[in-house]
Length: 200
Image 1 (cartoon, helix red, strand yellow):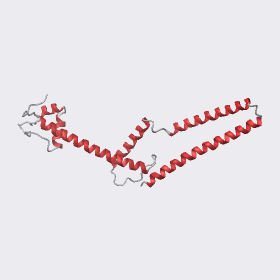
Image 2 (cartoon, one colour):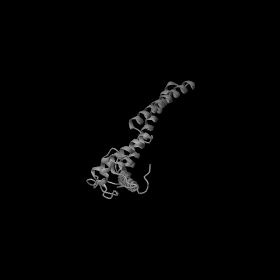
Image 3 (cartoon, rainbow, N blue to C red):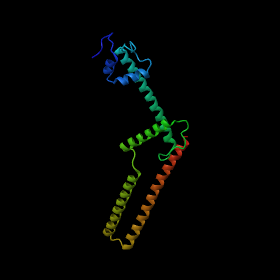
Image 4 (tube, helix red, strand yellow):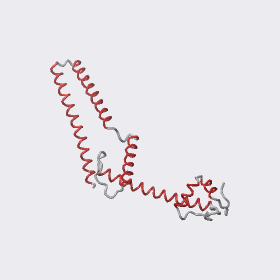
C-alpha cells in the first residue's frame, strides 16, 4: 500500500516496505551518504524516512548501476573482440598490458560464455566429432563407389584387368581429393591466423 503524502516511516517499517532486512538498510545508509531521510536516528530518537524520496533515490541508484554495468560489459566486449582477432582460441596472450587481474578474469569468462553459446547454437563443433563424421562419410562413399564400379564391371563384362585398373585409378583419385581438401582447410586456417595477427 502506498504511503500518503507527508507520511514517514521508521527504519523497521522502511525496511519492510523495501522488502529488505534491517542490516541491508543500514548498509545502504552507510554506503550512500546522500540516502534520503527526514530524521537521523540517534539515542532515544528513531530514524524517519519519506518512502517516496527513498524509492526515487533507489531507482536512480539502480539506473546508475545498470549504466555502469552496461559500460563495463561494452568495454569487456570490445576487449574480447580485440583478443579474438589477435590470438588463436587455444593461445593465451603472453601479456595483457594494463588490463587488471579482475578484467582478465572477466575477459576469459566472457570468452568461455561466447564459446558455450556458439556450441549451443551449433556454430561451434568439436573437432574430433567433425573428424569422425568426415571419416565415416568418406568411408561410406568409398565403399559405395567401389560396389558401383564392380557392379558396372559385371554388367558390362569388363575383363578382370580392366576392373583392377579402374579400382586402382579410383583409389588414386580418392587419395588426391582427400589430400586437396586437407590442404585447403590448412591454408584457410593459416590465412585466418595471419589475418588476425596483421590486425594488431
